[in-house]
Amino acid sequence: MASERKKRNRNIFFSIVLFLFIGGYTVFFTSRFWLRIPVQSGNATKIGTTVDWNDREVKLIRWEYSKQQNEMEVELDITNKRYDGINRYKFSAVDLNGNPLYVDKIIEEDDWIVLQIKDLPSRWSDISLRMDMPKESEDTTLKLYSSLQDVKKVGKIEKRSRTEYKVLRCDSQIADYNKKIQKAEQKQGKLNQENLRIDDKIVELKEKETYQTDEEKENTEQLISDAESQKQMNTDEMEELKNKVTEYQQRVSNIEKQKEKIANE
Image 1: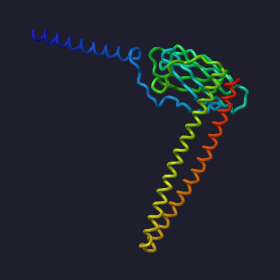
Image 2: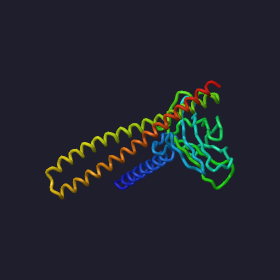
Image 3: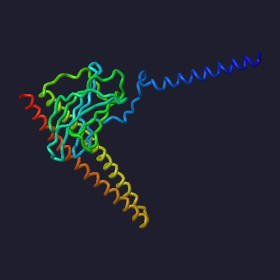
């Protein structure tokens, strides 16, 4: 009797273990179909990033996603530094599971590309956009990434004319330069504040010299010299930043004129 109960308990135990094993196996290998995979935002290519690829500079200008339309729009600037006359490329895209996605070329010029990635899966986390040379070669594939967490979300990707896309491109360039201006001016402000603190420190050090020995004065003079050198370095950097701001402002002005001309065409 006790032997039968022991045997029955052993069978129940092994049945539970088998059930848990099969259940865990099923959950592990099917989770990608029902569970959204966590996104690591560090993998996404940041807007404004320029990548060197096959003697070309490829800059990501814009990457937008419309949940309503289930599609994306990507804008790239391309500078061909090889001057080989090859300015047409092959584009493809895949989701995290390697499933291919349809890529439509909306604008294709030598230095400017606008693409739309369509029919995205209902549940996605990461998208990889691939760029290849037009002919099979040993050149590497350029891969740009976006994620559900990082992509700019828009209500609708509008249908635009070529002129409207050109205006939008101008707006993106102006916004990019304005960010650079803001960043340079913030850096100027920080350096200026640091120089004010250096001035205060130099005054403090000189006041202490009155009651110092010759050896102490020598050390203090070295500290003052180091502080003045740092102040000059800051001043030189502020001048460089000032010149950059002036350059960026001129570029913005030129783009605004170009935008006005395009809009009136």
